[in-house]
Image (cartoon, rainbow, N blue to C red; front, side, top):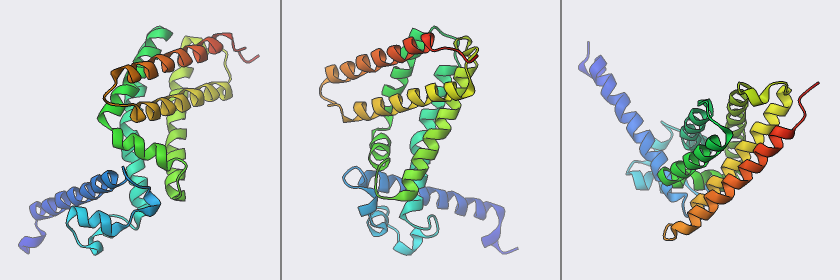
Length: 215
């Protein structure tokens, strides 16, 4: 067997391929802090990474596909954090507080990802808009499943539970966008956003308690 095709060598090549792919994603995300995806060229991205433009096509068909990969990367960890909060058996007030804290922590860890999703959700690249919509819809389905398992949802129709989940998801995305635009030099601004988010979620929760169950 040729040494170039041994399992160990193939493993090294695969690891290097994944490393280059991630470097392209990271470079694009950094560049997108100053511009939209529709204006970003692949040569700009490959220049930052230090690879030839032709190497880009070993990882992505085009910039739209890279953008879709960024969408998946951007929202994956938020899904995990919010699912964990909703899965806990807690009082509504505590769930609200934990949800807002989770969003704030996510933004602190991934500000560029949040900014990217906020900008491209209504941006000029159709595939990316559709990917964001699909991810948020999946997120809504996950939240709906968690809500349906709660005692407060007894008697609710599946449609009403999904509508409530959509309200929560839209609110969390809006809150994340507000956090990422807040001044990092003014902690009071972040506290004000968190306080408003909690009050708005409590209003949704209050409406939930008075919403008529399905007959």
